[in-house]
Length: 65
Image 1: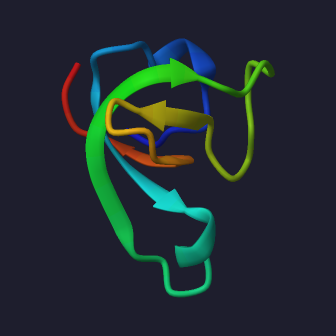
Image 2: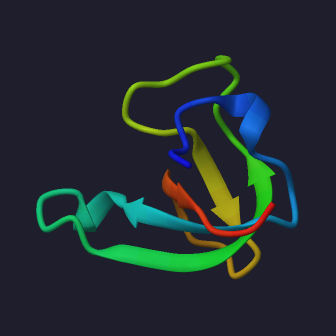
């Protein structure tokens, strides 16, 4: 499942995100969602989240439901 719809993402989910500095390379970072930062219901590049370790990026894959 992709991370473009806000309704699919909630705190506690395991996701892969792309960090700002990794957008060109596409390198993914794995973590657990702490906060959802995007207010819109949909974002074409992925919903922006903060992971429990403090890293911020856009969701590319939702790994657990």
